[in-house]
Image (tube, rainbow over all chains, first blue to last red):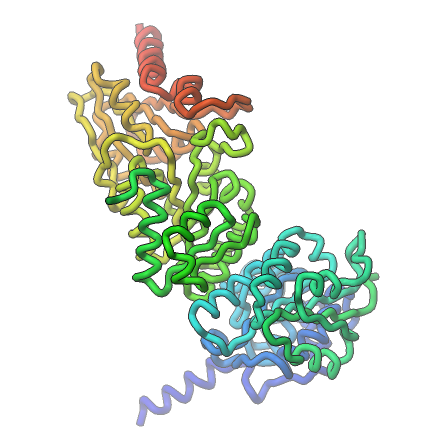
Length: 246
Length: 308
């Protein structure tokens, strides 16, 4: 009987941001404020906010109580800078206690300017240096294929300026050629690439055989429907356009 | 029959291990892909033998991504492209993510001398040694390379195995990363440490000298206890087949509380601009037997002169 109570207590304590603390979209701004100290946020903090919310609220099959489950969808934030929106969404969904956001950038905090998978539950990769996430995502998709684990999807978020890094060009070609249907890239386009992408980002992927859709990066229904559109036999890119970086 | 060259043995052993180990995967960037096609590995294991084309940075990250999914992965190409070109990938994709992996290079130092500087590197071991947690193997014989490879596949560590076209006539018992005593001098005798393919030249260079000859094929972590137990005097010479001084700090640390003098012999950091053969490069850098003998003799003479 005593043992039963101990188990219950452990479960409650290991769920500090659990069901009863869940935050809705309207609460994200307040969570970001716990990090940045105000309610007005820079565009680098919020360019990814809506796609991240839609991913975690409507698309990703992932359980915050079991973030390493083998049947989870994988989400890789390749554009690791400006991770406040990411942290806020993870806290809102119960991956960790929202109070942790107050420790942001402190020496001992798990929450830095670039996320570390070894410090935060549910974070698939440590990112920051641009151009590593998509190549790692290809490796994960190939790893799932090699293990015949056909359920999970691999999502990777990149920024339009991040695509400047040549490693992404290597990755776009290879994912297309390998027909990695499990892979979906979300390219958040705030037109921050200095030299631009004439004819748009989607065309770069489509040329290499990807399925592609371009949506309003603030329209939740449009983001959801683009991220759940079928793309048999090929990888998929969703270009989410948001207001230009100011 | 077992393959005589390290690279040939690598193909043979990995082909066998791919059949036996469902968790093992191999990621290639064209180099050696034809040999893994000829071995049948690509056809038998299409999801675990991946050739990404001439994209070395992608290759390293793909190997790490597969490792994040629980695979034991090997990435392989020529040393300058595997380590120098892809160095940030090596840095961030394994230790920083917190996963292991196996990097296997071929074309060590100036093995492919005639290809010129673009295909030569003496700095790969020094570079990997800057990263935390890597085991670095410098086999001096195909049999040693095979045992290192099998051990690496069994573990989950980050392991760099540097295959070379240059090898010693006989393999040594290097399992476990030990310091092998090849020949023991009298108490107080000079100690010469040969790394990997340098052993035959070192043995020849010291055959008329009262010296303890030690052999090391695993240079990280450097076996400090093994070295301390084996040194016979205060004079220590390190002979490495790559950038001169790559392991001097480790040896100094191992002997930090013992009086000692250390001579490091290796490849100098020069823009050499020569083609030809590995033997010609060894001669130019004093890394053949006469060169090693002369360097040691001059060092000992200089020491004797300054003691007078």
